[in-house]
Length: 258
Image (cartoon, one colour):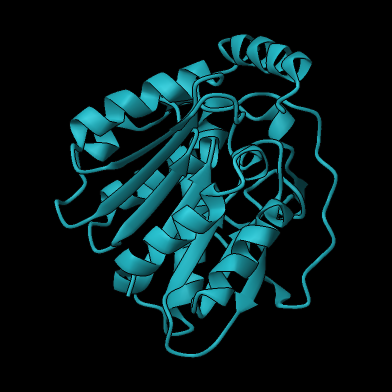
């Protein structure tokens, strides 16, 4: 049974998010899960000189690929269970990155980056992390036509932004996006989606801002999948509080990204 005291805390956190921008519920820094023996740590640079560190999971050859973008203040390790589920369903490349200022992605030419001190432009620049990650995958033979981009919270906004700019990407999954997180907007990006692109939107009713966002985004792209819960929290927390969600998302991705 869902802990009602936890629900109250979530409501307070949602209210607090109004002060910092839609698309992210502030939380304490999460514990780092153990690393997977299915992954290797890799790094690459963005066009503006940030070193991005990522976990690269590899499975059987000839499968599709996925790029995973965490919520704030989480890190790449928050995707471990989801990444392994994708490998089990035949994905070949799964890349979970630390966005700039998070986890191990804190260096830009000797300058230390910390998301806690970011201005709006710093958050908007995270799209360069996504672009660099896709380029890294392309160097390993991945084509955008077999790539799914998955994000949670601000990562969901970034996933939508990337999908809107690249209509060859067949699938975008957005867990708890917002209308506008520090200038990383979603309605205008969803309007840019091609009819052929799949969009899977997930939010919980206790996460009011994301819940309302998804309903409006689903009007803009009326063939989007809209998955709703009542008390499942925010972002990748929904995988814990809605146990069937992970398998459903993975199954949808497998159907869309051949």
